[in-house]
Length: 489
Ligand code: NAD
Image (cartoon, rainbow, N blue to C red; front, side):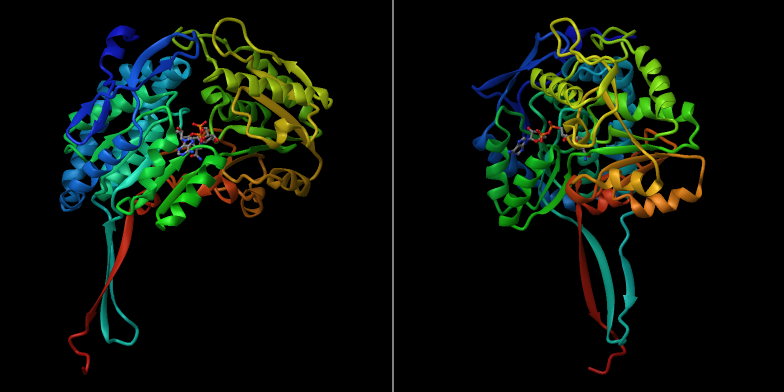
C-alpha cells in the first residue's frame, strides 16, 4: 500500500548529522519533485565548517569503533537490513518523489539496496588474513586486515538508497568511520537511511552526513585534511578525475565508480524475444538513468529490423508519467538540464540520418519527461553513440562480423557494463576476453547483485563494490614478520 506523502516527508531529518546530533544551519536548499517541479523539503546546507566538524566527529570515534568486534558490527548491519525492509514503503516513496523512478522500481531498489546491508553483515565476520612461514624459514608471516580509517563517501542521485548502502555497509563492516555526502538532488533517502542506521544501533559519530548545495565546498577541505584516509565516489567521470587529482595530495585510497557507455550486442543466433526482455531491463530500468544502462544496441544486420520492431513494440507499452501513479512504468528525468541533454542527443542523431521509430520528443506536463525512444540507422559518429545518454533512448547500430561487433563495442573510453545475446556458448569466453568492460551480462540484461564485484575498467573507474572485493576497499593489509623460534639468530 502506498505511504502517505506528508507522513513520510515528516520522518526525514532535515539537518546535518554531525557526531551526536542532527544540526541545523542557516543556509538551506530545496529538494524538488522532478515529476511536478514542486518543492518537497528544505534541508540544511553544509560547507567547509560543517564538513570539518563531521570529520572531527568521525576521527574522535575511529579507534574505538575499529576495536569493536566484527560480530557487533555485523549485528548492526543485520538490524539495519531488517529496518530498511520494515520501512520499505517510506524509502520507496522518498525515492520516487525526489528522483522520479516509478514506485515499483523504487521498491525494487529497496530490496537491492538492503541486500548490501545483509551481504556485508555476513562478510564482516569473514575478513580473513593468512599465516605462513617465509620461504627461507627465518620468519613467521601473519597478514591481517585493518580498517583503512575515516572515509569520505560521495553518492549520485540515480540510486539514492543503493549507492549509499553499497558504501556505508562495507565501511561499517570493516570498522571505518565516515562522512557521507549525498547528491543534492536526492538527499532525502540518504538522510532517512542515516537515521535508520542510528536506529539500528550504529554508535554516534561513526556515520556523519553533510548534504549541501556545493559539493566541492564539502569535499575539498576534507580531502585536504590528512586525517581522511579514503574517498569512495560514485558519479560522473569528469568529477571522478577531479577527485583523483585531489586525492593524490594526501595519497588517499580511492574507489571510483564512474560513467559508462554499455554495448548491448545481439548476434544473429540470439533468441530475439529474450534479447528484447534483456534490452528492456538494461535500457529502461531507472528511466535509462543508470551507469550500467545499455547505451548502444549493436545488432547483427540480418536481425536488426526484427529486433528494432519487437523492441519498439515493448517500449510502446510503457506508460510515461508521475512515478507515484502505480500504473506508470517510466518516470521523468531528474532535472531540466537532463531532459534538454537527452533531447539534444536525439536531435543530433536524427540530423545525422537516424530515425526515431518510436518516441523522439519531450513528454507533456510540468515534469522533465522524455518519451521512451528507439533510434534506428544510427551512425557511429552520432553523439548518442559516444556519450552517456542517461535517458530512455535506445540507439541501434548494426554489424556484420563478430570482430566488427567487438571493435564497435570497445570503441569508447568507458568500460563498465556490457551485454551479449547469443545462443552460441563458445562466444561467451571469446567475447569475455575481447570486451574491455568490468561487467558482462550473457543473455541477461540486469546483473547487479550485492554478492558480485561491481566496477569498471578504463575511464569507468577503479576498485569494486559488493562481493568479497567490496570489503577489501575499506581495509588495509598489515604484515607482521615474527622471528621464527627455530631461527639461528
Ligand atoms: P556527478 O558526478 O555530477 O555527481 C555525483 C556526486 O558527486 C554528487 O554527490 C555530487 O554532488 C558530487 N560532486 C559533483 N561535483 C563534485 C566536486 N567537484 N567535488 C566533489 N563532489 C562532487 O554525477 P551524477 O550526475 O550525480 O550521477 C550520474 C553519473 O554517475 C553518471 O555518469 C553515472 O554513470 C555515474 N554512476 C556510476 C555508477 C557506477 O557504479 N559506476 C553508479 C551510478 C552512477
